[in-house]
Length: 136
Image (cartoon, rainbow, N blue to C red; front, side, top):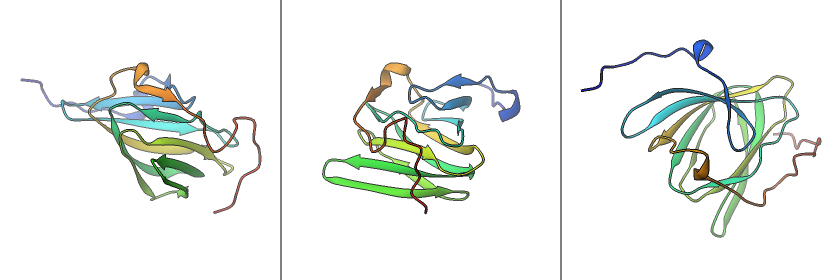
């Protein structure tokens, strides 16, 4: 039986997610995992679609936009502190930081992240070179 664990964001190793954001994996159990993502001001992630995992994000700091597309449904939503969004498996998504401070996100991945091959690159809403930001 696995013992319970405790983690601290400040002590977690920083990695790069396939979408280009910085990620600090925190804890994982059989059904899911938690990590903290960060995207710097003016940055745009690469658009991806997850093969099998679902995610729930909670914005902890900063401001931005998230584009999501699944089948014929497509939308862009404002991200700011306290906003929570879902990313069902198979949903194409992309996000960008439009504020003057880094955007920090707590994310739960279900099941735990299996590896970088999980992310499939797709055509997104924004090019990574775009500097203009649509206000919320």
